[in-house]
Length: 162
DNA sequence: AGTTCGGACCGTT
DNA sequence: AACGGTCCGAACT
Image 1: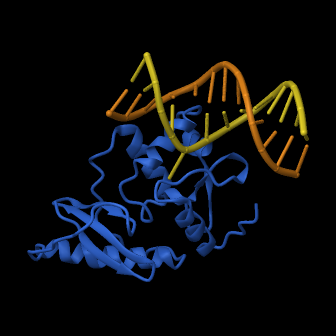
Image 2: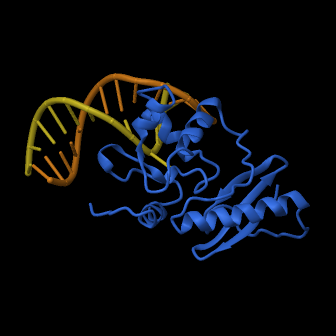
Image 3: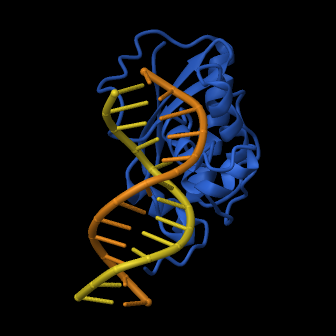
């Protein structure tokens, strides 16, 4: 699998596609160095990538993505997929705590495991792990860097004045 | 009001 | 067996 660059106002993301759909999305600077990009991707991937690009730009603008590419989440465990499914139900502008997500997937007390699952999220932005905060409205962590988390939340209309 | 400490909790490697 | 994007209460400042 070979990453395809995705240019935005916030920098160049990288997107990986499997035969099933979008499998991974990496923030600018993270992930691998050079997307060599010698050969043109097969047609379905180009179509998916257009959808991904549009969706990423919409989320960066604080808007709800209208169309998503198919997401390949087969890499996750059952618990992780349950968490990711719960994350996708959080609308822009809304937030949940790790503990709330734990309860939502039927494992109250698994707040830390939810944090792990968020960190393992292969498709940030489209699976909005940035909308999960620590208890009491505290920021919590973010694999992609807390600056991104702050930026995305601010774009979705949050007052971050701690 | 804010901070730190200690234990408990659960899925993953 | 050890580690986390946690949580909560207690004991501080």
